[in-house]
Amino acid sequence: MINRTSLCPCQSGKPYFDCCQPFHLHQMIPDSAEKLMRSRYTAYTQVNIPYIVETTVPAQQPLLDQQAMQLWGMRPIGLG
Image 1 (cartoon, rainbow, N blue to C red):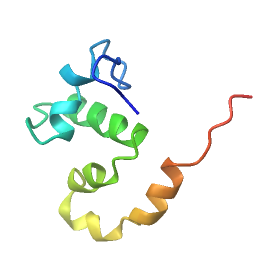
Image 2: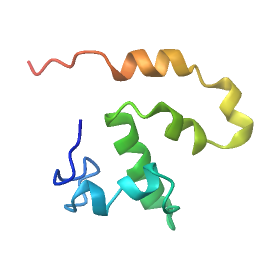
Image 3: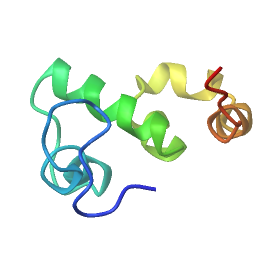
């Protein structure tokens, strides 16, 4: 889990609270495709599936398997 002072997983070099968190909390809307994709990447790292669904084109949302996305995001990741 990311804390307030952690660097954002999107690799912007900014703290999470000053980068993608405002998008995830619906305080701001990404104003560029790059910010949207960075915010979605960070949402995946945090298993924030609702944000991923909300930022998917509406016609495609019913096709998303949210349970599978949740399970995929929670899987252990090996480093070797």
